[in-house]
Image (cartoon, rainbow, N blue to C red; front, side, top):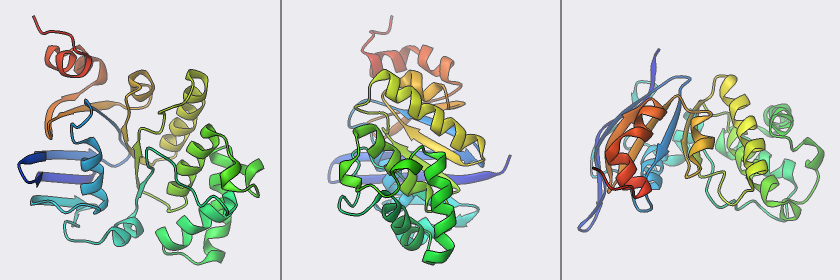
Length: 241
C-alpha cells in the first residue's frame, strides 16, 4: 500500500521543552491510525506539524511524496489535509450548511457552485441533513461534534485528522459517532485519530502509536500495544513489574 504521509526525524522544542523528539512515522493511504498518550505527550503538536500550524525545528514532512515542510497551512488543506478540533468552534450565527460551505470554498479552494452538492453529501453522511438550515449555535454537543467533522470533510480531505472528537459525549453518543467515522474510513479516507476513549479508537484503528514527552515509544497492532508494560505504566499508571 502506498505511503500517504511521512514524518522523517521531526523535532520541535519551545525553549527547553521538547514536544516532538525525532518522530519518524509513515501512514499508508487508506489506513486508520490511532494516537494515544498522556496529557502533554505531544499529540496535538503532532497534528500541528502535519497541518503546518507549527513549523518543525528539523526533519521533513511529506504528503503524497511531496515535501510540504515549508508549505503554508492553507495550501496543505487544498492538497487534502483536513482537521477537526477537540473543542468545536462553529460560526454560530451561520447555518450548518453555510459552515460547510466555508470549508468547501476556503479550505478546499472550490467555488460555491462546486461545493454545494458535495456539502449536501457530507451532511447526509454525518447525520446533519435535517439540521442543514439550523443556526450552528443551536446544536447539541453531539451535533456540534458532527458539524466539526462535517466541516473537515467539506474540504475533501485525503487525510482526516481527528482530535479527541469523542470527548464529552455519553457512551451512546460516542458509539453513534464511531459508526459515522467508520463509514467515512470505509469510503477510503485515511484517518489519524487522537482519542482518550481507547475502546472507541481501536474499533476503527488498525494500528496504534503511543507518544510520551514528544517521543514515539510504541506502535503496532492495538491489542499488542495496549498490553505493552511500558505503555500500561505511562498511559494507565500500572507499575511495570
